[in-house]
Amino acid sequence: LVVNVLLTFRSSEMYKKMMGRAQKQITDEGNAATNKTHTTLLKKYLLVYLLATFSDWLQGPYVYQLYASYGYSDKQIAELFVAGFGSSMI
Image 1 (tube, rainbow, N blue to C red):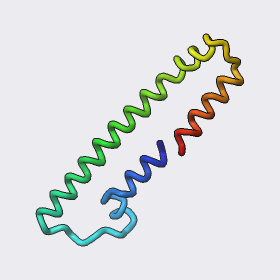
Image 2 (image 1 turned 45 degrees about the vertical axis):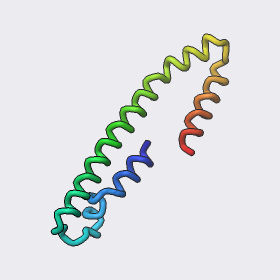
Image 3 (image 1 turned 60 degrees about the vertical axis):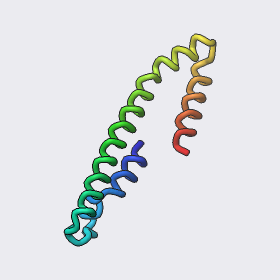
Image 4 (image 1 turned 90 degrees about the horizontal axis):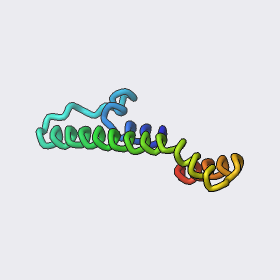
């Protein structure tokens, strides 16, 4: 999650301005419209991505209870969770 947020932020104009690499003032309206469209897309993407990630986190306790009801031990459940989180990092 953190890596995706940082990569999204890094591709934005705000990052370039903060790092002192701001490009010259945009004077062409076509470029300004493209920049505004890009910023809007980034905000929408980030909102949807965070909502999806948050909903995934919310299901964790229910998945734990499901594994427990199938008879898995706490150690096996922990290994399944670590495998799941590890695979999502790839």
